[in-house]
Figure 1 (cartoon, rainbow, N blue to C red):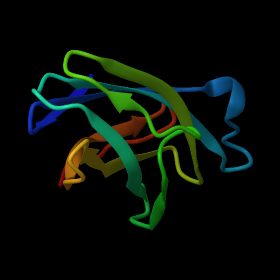
Figure 2 (tube, rainbow, N blue to C red):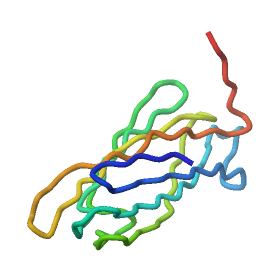
Figure 3 (cartoon, helix red, strand yellow):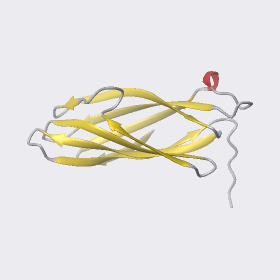
Figure 4 (tube, rainbow, N blue to C red):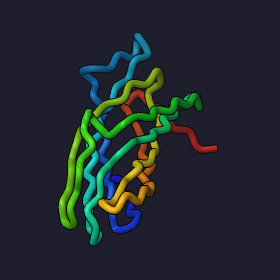
Length: 130
């Protein structure tokens, strides 16, 4: 599990390779990832936007920006958490993702929180050390 904390808001990510949705012959690899956002702060916050940077094993990057996550803009009161699962395809057998969420307090203050960088690994992915 990968973890980051910004302004007492914890984000954890658990990636999972999905061999049943992947095909090495077609250079299609697919992962799901489950994100849990926990508000340990004193203020109620709303998740407004997301920004992902997705990098494959060849170093190609793709940026994804949008409103909310999985069609929602969850509101988290102190002590509350929100969990969702999404997915990502890559043309290589490994890669990684990192990102940020824009949050907003009830008073209208906007700020960003980190999503921890996390590795997308498959059994076909070959790792080399230089």
